[in-house]
Length: 174
Image 1 (tube, one colour):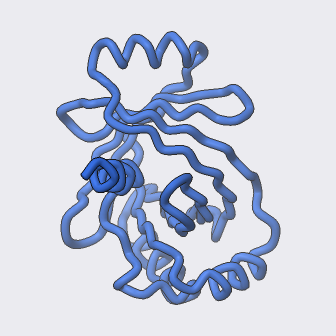
Image 2: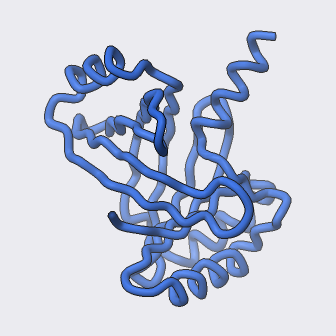
């Protein structure tokens, strides 16, 4: 199971982040994604559908508590997303759906930087630093990115977009 170190933060100072991203160059890709999360017992399971028609099933387990957010994940390409979504909905039930547009940047070939616009939630930055053999280099790159982008502790989010969306939906029902 691949492993990465993640950070997600609400953009408090978008101008600084956008300037820093501009210094990195153009994004490698722009993605339109719909993530459908299913109700599973261990970790999270989501069907990610891309705007170009491709899709993948992603299962991941991540520490959402204190400390570094190491994530173990598996990705499976899906050729029939509509049928897969129906199957998983019947088997597990749908938890929440998150729609986003994402600009992807790379840093030192080991980190992905995402500028995410989440429908109904706003603008976020996310780092995913891949761990190949040890965890020292990813931690070093992670710290570089936090410093480079001026990420403040108060803006760091220790949950998934699904958790944020679920919280917003519950608040709207009150």
